[in-house]
Image (cartoon, rainbow, N blue to C red; front, side, top):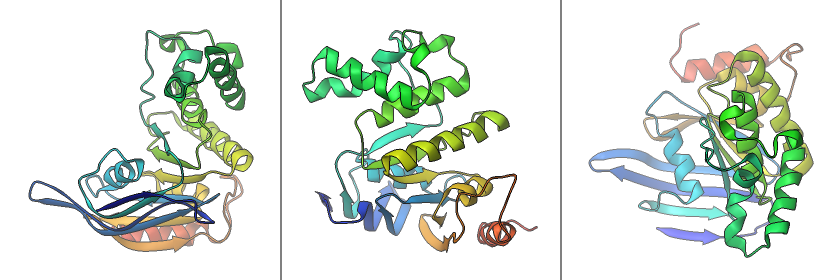
Length: 245
């Protein structure tokens, strides 16, 4: 196994020929994934296919694997559950990850407030997490991920627990933040429509192997104004997932 950090032009994160085992279970089988700077890559697959494990290896949370991992800086993560500290206010939750960077409390608060402004939650900085709606809590989770200004953002089903309207709002927010900050994104999702709507490329994972890659040529179309290719992309991905139309 090789663990490196690199600033090669155009690469935010990459796995090369990664294998991982849990006991006798071969979870990842020769997986290679690359996320370019400013690129959104979606990773889809059935439950148990290894999607979250790919994300964990890229994040550096799972080190017992073979193959190579290359990332620029420290990747940031956001999960389906916001995982906020209920005993800390929103501003402190957002700035928590900066406490290890030897910043002053004033600097951390300034960075946290800037991140909260990005997700349009400045007015909730002093609120407690349990008073937030689901969408607001997920916005705080995004702000916490982005406060360190990462080159690579890793999202594990970040909108899966939200209602349909809030999910659409969060997709739009993610794209606004992506356009502003130009980070690379790996989006793990079960939602084929979400993958087609957001990603430049979609990878299909099956039993720990990447079995298909689809380039989306007309990305970021509004759900109310899909492209002529949207249904073709959707049908191709569902076919790879073994879902009959």
